[in-house]
Length: 231
Length: 336
Image (cartoon, rainbow over all chains, first blue to last red; front, side, top):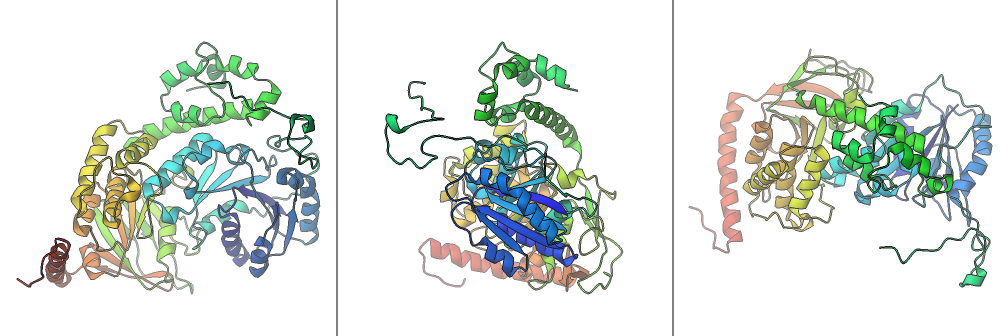
């Protein structure tokens, strides 16, 4: 079974891109399963079901979705193996710009959209910088110049990645992406001992544990203070 | 050629002097590289402890790898600037039912216009996707694309900044909050053109030539009218886009001189493809491709009879345009 991880800011078009790409793979007889990681709520599992793709969803609730993802991806992989998929797609929303959801040697795709602003590529950390493939969506509604500038910005923060423009509505470019996602001779049987490409955002303070009161005396653990004196 | 050792021994300022294009790369980093003028990269990287690296989501090894990648790619990119696309050739595949396409090869030369006709869902998008992806018999249609009559390098697929097709369509809008001049400057910078000011002035002049109503370099791009936006997009794509092929998807008649727009693109040596069902536009093309059931059904070279008809149509169009202008000027319409 192949495993790919897809990530990207909320509403950038991850699910649409995956569904359009999966459609072309399924036409070629590839058996696909998906798992959707999110924080509070998702209806994307219904979209997968409607497309005939077996899906599991995981909501991290008050936990960091990245941490939740990494503690569950092994079990998800086992589910995929048991179901005999050829390709398992793990989709997770990047909710903070410091997200780092990729595993070494597991194909990593970041979906980001042209409408998010030209400074966005610089703001996003490992989720964009360490992806193998960067998919840029919503190109059909901005000008050619904006597409070129945005792609150049993406290139300057991740020169090694393959950058593709995909239309999540019409599926333009999805076939081409699909040829990069699945190789029949690749088999991921276990993730044990594999490493993340970059450490995840860390936090352990009283607020992580449910504290709601504001004030110095309630702040414990890993707390950092804003510097208002600089500049 | 830069090596890892060389990079580590240099200061960021030295690197910038040698590779001016690194500016955008350095600016994209989460760490401030220009701050320390005397320190070499090695010293800067050694100075960062683990927690400050994690803080900035910075990985020294990964950074060096990307820096090397970026330099290599940009050097190839700048070296290849001279490589022009003179022609594009499509070798036949088959339609949705597997019936082979009838032509032996289909040639598009630079500075020519080809229109593409066929009902929605007939396979126009697939044809364009084949061109964009530089198909090598590996797409659902089985078509292959040649560039300058040769099998193209895979760079056309994967290298950033080297895309074969630029697109213009009715639904495209400017979304950045910038003035026309700032916007063009940003685009010129990303393309690393040498004569920035000159190119920008040329684009604005050309766009004003196409649009009915003139705009200023200081006008915000989001406040331009539909016609002005379209004019600016066309002029910018003609003069500043790196892509040799321009696809136009149904440009409307309102507020823009379509003939001049096509002449501008052709004058800049683009290969123009145009999806349209407007007779005036379709007949301005040198040839038109008829798409049916996912395949190229026929190729018609615009006939003499059709060209004569184009003159009549243009005359009628001019009249309409005149009436439009009179309306805009607040006059009472009369046929003269």
